[in-house]
Amino acid sequence: MPRKIKIAILFSGNGSNMQNIIETFHQKKIIYENKEYFFEIKGCICNQKDAFGITRARNLEIPCLLLPHQDFTDRISFDLALEKEIKKMDVDLVVLAGFMRILSKKFCDSFKIINIHPSLLPKYKGANAIVESFESGDEEVGVSVHWVNEELDGGAIILQKSFLRIPEDSLEVFSQKIHALEYEIYPEAIKKAIASL
Ligand code: GRF
Image (cartoon, rainbow, N blue to C red):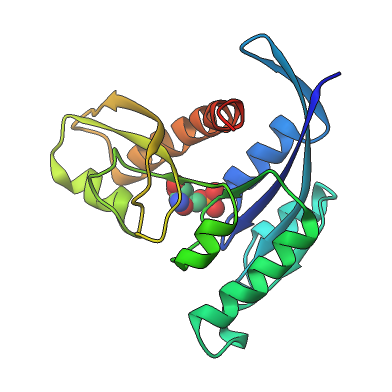
């Protein structure tokens, strides 16, 4: 019998990583390191009402809850509402896919949470990582998947992958390469994270 793994995905915007994860895992049997898993994406939560990802989730027929953080007076009350909703989903793993919120320690301690970040952490933490990485002049650039704690982009690394920068690349081409690498590394990192639980 495959081990059943239930996942919740949190996002704030475009949702391309969310879509990639749903298409890779939802209701699929996957073998990783000689073990069988059966994945179910229980649902998505979005904190921005105009996020394009809401349309993606709808098209993929995955339940998507809209929980605008602006409706809450402070971070703690938003995190409490989020915690309550995720507990209802009863998941093994919470996957952040472009979820633009720093989460409180209590929230981080309540679930196993992972995040993808478009730089070779600890370099270029924060919301501007692609541009900072592009402007850095670093020869080697890449993406990271890490466990989430209350520090911004701060938890232990699960997987990183890099490539050598082509100096002539425009920011647009550079961003496309980063995103393509994200779609490759995030599913791998999810399997690795699940196998370690
Ligand atoms: C990605 O670059 C991810 O690394 C970062 O936010 C972006 C989300 O993109 N955390 P998308 O919404 O998945 O298209």
